[in-house]
Image (cartoon, rainbow, N blue to C red; front, side, top):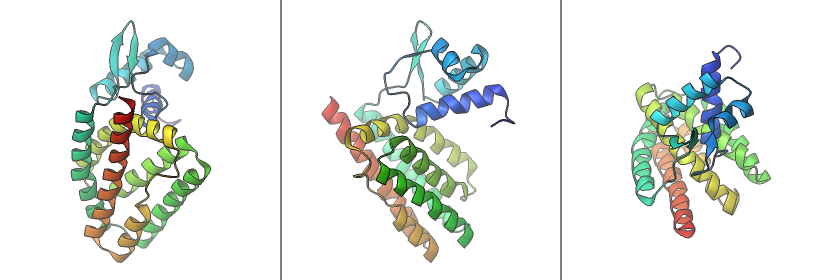
Length: 214
């Protein structure tokens, strides 16, 4: 991060605030508040907001305020459809390109996920879970699809944080071990199936939380 330009560092920091639920859906935040909180200039913050707004991760609320969009049931259904189509495909492609050392590294990431669950550490769970998925998909070689998935995660992350906050992390289903086992067997279809189930179960929990919060 230290070698990146200031505007890119600022973008990634605000992106992570969205991705890992530090900014709740509907919670307004001022541009000046971001400038002060991140201890950076107003120009990098405005550029980051412009990019994140274009990606659908933020929306302008007026009076120099932005917020994370609140998901509707329709939005969530679209996101679930897109993720269930793209991410299992990427996982299947990755299976063919991974060596045992790559799988070992993925297993270490999954252990970090499990430790976060045991501690009830929501932020760490969200971050480690994200690292696991993005590390897996990176082996697919499908850069365009990976970029699309990044955008989908930006829209889902804040709502997943709400689910974790209400119900904790211990009840979250974990299909990662199943995916890792299939990776070691070199079975792309089973890896894809495990990731598909992981996605759908997560979205089902968010959908249930939306209904209860309505």
